[in-house]
Image (cartoon, rainbow, N blue to C red):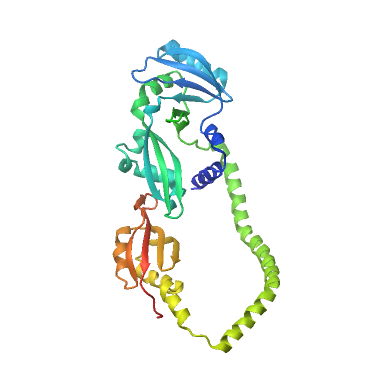
Length: 345
């Protein structure tokens, strides 16, 4: 979970970079590239990339001598080994998911791979690119990149016999920009680092315990300053309230506005009664009679009938496709509905 949150934060920081720098960061700056031609594969081209500039190192075969040449070149340059495929070798598919799914995107794509593609997650190398975050519709538009493992099996087996293993797969898109897919799973911490990891976790735990109290003290001091600064405005507001009370204004304006947009506390109480157990909301928005709900549920299909049973809710429907997550088993959903004219209860 911590790794997924960290990757999500790094992706947000990456989006602040100019496009030229983002494309440069899509691939290792220094690498020994093995150019893999279209099948059948008989020879491999070696290319050395240093600071973005490439130098051809010759052609090698898949025999013992050629594979030894790849191994010696990889040991000499001390740079990551990268496979580069033709553009058409890498498959793409656009996908739209609820925005709330982004924090566990890798796990969700792995779990849904057999539904999104003809393959299971174990049959492919895959990665993804985020194309658009639609904050208004609460949707995440991304491009799934994948390559069947069977297409690389001959080359990977041959390289494995020579004692080398590539780290990345590259394939250019239509504009020539690199697309990368990792070929190795995330590294597992070595047992020798266990004590350091436990100590770091303990420090983080103590920091997490102390931080709320430190922030509370800081916020209390800041709040006291803000209260003192707002005292003139408070006195003015109280004087205006007394003036309005003396004029005895008509309450119909306030009642009409409440009937139009609804009472937030009463909406929250109504949803608490309507939504079944196993349903948790991450986001609730109420604007001018329009109600939007984002969250997870053990059975999202039963939410629409449950909401439709209330005479105060109209046109309840899913605002995005319902997606499943594996751990814990649940369904991520986004619902949009309208509120009927509201009356005090």
